[in-house]
Amino acid sequence: MFGDWHDPIPAVIEATPKESLVRNDIYDCWPRREWNRGSIVLVGDAIHPMTPDLGQGACQAIVDGTTLASCLLGGDDVPLALHAYRRSRYLNAAIAMLFSRIWGGAGQLEGRVTCAIRDSLVKAMPLSLQLRQLDLVIQKQSNWVNSATV
Ligand SMILES: Cc1cc2nc3c(=O)[nH]c(=O)nc-3n(C[C@H](O)[C@H](O)[C@H](O)COP(=O)(O)OP(=O)(O)OC[C@H]3O[C@@H](n4cnc5c(N)ncnc54)[C@H](O)[C@@H]3O)c2cc1C
Image 1 (cartoon, rainbow, N blue to C red):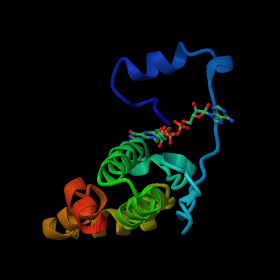
Image 2: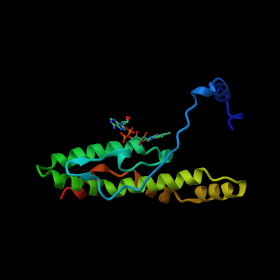
Image 3: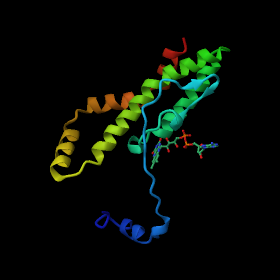
Image 4: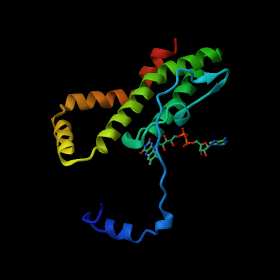
């Protein structure tokens, strides 16, 4: 697959011992409605695992952490803070998971005609639509926290 890539990629692959290759299956999952039980609360892949196709899993986990901290700093009512945390993160995490799945699927399509159609559609996608998608995935944290803490 990489034989005609530029140097040193074929050489690096050639020099890699077979035993050092790792193969892991990848799973995603729509985030559950319940993010906490009592004061036990989930962040990151534990609640919204996504495929790596948008490079968002760890980013979303970090936003979970900072949002959770902001919500907890907002007052002494822990159940309310955990509710605000889930409310502020659910949609963003679900969208990131869904778009990762869609783009991952699109990237793995096979067949010359299918791939040509896919490539044409992607090229024809207006920049405004691409940016709108990005906006939905890379949500400004302050908006989510502000809209959720009351
Ligand atoms: C190939 C690939 C490429 C990726 N690329 C990107 C990228 O470019 N950008 C990006 O943002 N994300 C990327 N991700 C996703 C990212 O790696 C994950 O979303 C992120 O690591 C999730 O962090 P987490 O802390 O939620 O979970 P994890 O990183 O899985 O951490 C959970 C930890 O808990 C430990 N653990 C599990 N059970 C127990 C237990 N019972 N007791 C104690 N410890 C336990 C595990 O060993 C692990 O260390 C990629 C993922 C893959 C597979």
